[in-house]
Amino acid sequence: MRALEDRYGRVATDLRVSLTDRCNLRCSYCMPAEGLDWLPGEEVLSDDEVVRLVRVGVEQLGIREVRFTGGEPLVRRGLVDIVRRTKAIDPTLELSLTTNALGLARMADALAEAGLDRVNVSLDTVDAATFHQITRRDRLHDVVAGLEAAQAAGLGPVKVNAVLLRGVNDHQAAELLGWSIERGYELRFIEQMPLDAQHGWSREGMITADEIFARLEAEFLLEPAVEPRGSAPAELFRVNGGPATVGVIASVTRPFCGDCDRVRLTADGQIRNCLFAREESDLRAALRAGAADEELAERWLIAMRGKRAGHGIDDPSFLQPDRPMSAIGG
Ligand code: SAM
Ligand code: SF4
Image 1 (spheres, rainbow, N blue to C red):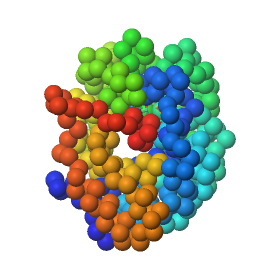
Image 2: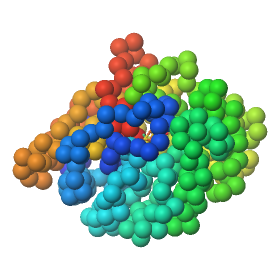
Image 3: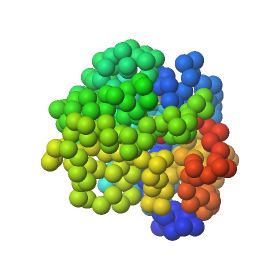
Image 4: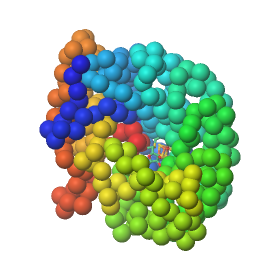
């Protein structure tokens, strides 16, 4: 087995698979109210193609963790089957899902039964009006029901991902943490990144990790949790002496590119070695032209060698990637 190693010695073992670029929410930091030009159906990998590429990653290239994402992966019709077939490749694979949880209440049991291990649910506020303001939809109750169903189905520890927006929900950070702790969810705040389709991100506008700490420490005692951070991007803190923790993913102000172990497969079959990559490697074309597994693996290895040392958001020459987060797979 070969490893997906880049020129800096980093080895990718964690594969993020985007199953669709479509979504049923319209989070303001992700996409515009009218949505985006979705990928044409024929460009999206079929279920068989997704499973084949994941199998190449696992069997030939040392992938140990697979996370399904999007867009919204729950809107992908074949999701449960894709999960089942992925788990069958290797039952020791860690399988997780990043989702907005709309419809998860209905699907959690089937996903758990198919072999999904965990979910990360994106939820930025527990205030219904603020939820509508951020997502442009009135669906907070569905997310809450989805979280409950995920926990009941054993898809835990259930993690909640939140993005704070200045003047919108940043004053609700402590409320969201208290709410999550009460229900046994592990909350992680993610710094907003320049990956929105509208290119509306600004360094001054984003809420930094330091600001997040300040807002939380006004109500909670936070101490660094003992485990080393390793390749996990979240810095973890014990809340009020534990056992509850909160994580902060400071992708912008404290980048963790040096420890990155990720690689991404887009819904249309492109390998991206970084969220912020400006190049992609087209596995779909090779696959549809009849490439053998070995050739697909070789192309994937080459794609990894082009991975840059860091995202360079702070460089004057930084350019936002052409595709937004929803199309890359967050
Ligand atoms: N629709 C699913 C969801 O929301 O969980 C999966 C895809 S979404 C693109 C994955 C994650 O990316 C979500 O947690 C979302 O909050 C986050 N995200 C989207 N745009 C972002 C941005 N500009 N900066 C930071 N995180 C972002
Ligand atoms: Fe959809 Fe997720 Fe983007 Fe929100 S963050 S619009 S739920 S893809």
